Image (cartoon, rainbow, N blue to C red; front, side, top):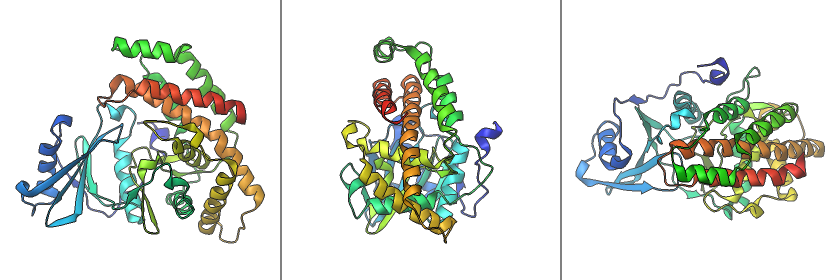
Length: 354
């Protein structure tokens, strides 16, 4: 593993996590979850366990497990998507999980197994395209992101962004094994992979000069990864977390306002909303890192410009990710067209911010 990839690896945490020598088949989630539960919840009667399969994710398989006597105690068992380890550092994910739990920002990780994790369920409501802009909710999200960004501070850290995009570009197949997928790729990416490489070089040359702080980032704050309960916000799923540009994490979150399965880019937040969000974020961020500093209008304007430029990097990242997933994932999702939609929006926004 290269130093660049591991620069953000986090130290061993105190939380005890059970390492289980088990592998679960995607098509046998309940059987596999039962095996995990014999270690994680040994007192549960296997005949009384209730299962709920979650179908929203486009990377992994997820199943919730509980019993009638104590319905609030829900164990989530996540099985990694096929070949997802090509794109995700699973060891780093485990350490990130434990670090954030110790900091009070993440649920408990109960166990790891060969191709997945078992962890605590977070009760609450999943954020949607309406609630993400609600006046009582978005300030909580902005503040939580600022807190996450100060969890693991390393002034010598390198951003993961460029390494990961380059890695994904190299993993895009020259020809898809599925003839139908190859036809879709040729239809939606008429200029081929060369166009993506060209944009990667351009973005890296421009955004590397933005002087955005390198912080510990979630890197995947789509709406389904944000849970709201009362006055508390919890970010879930840390498989993409790593050190990265501050402005990227925020810009990526704003890009996700448009949704995933049915994207509507008219929902991208406008300038007034963004500036309000960014001021709240900076107030929390400076309160932790520089308590005597007062947020100025210039601070907000600088971050606003950086964030909207890094939105481009978000689109390029997830487009290249999707093209790799299109070859390897067993999940029923049109990854190639998703990638094409991200690049279509990339072109529109590029004309506005570069």
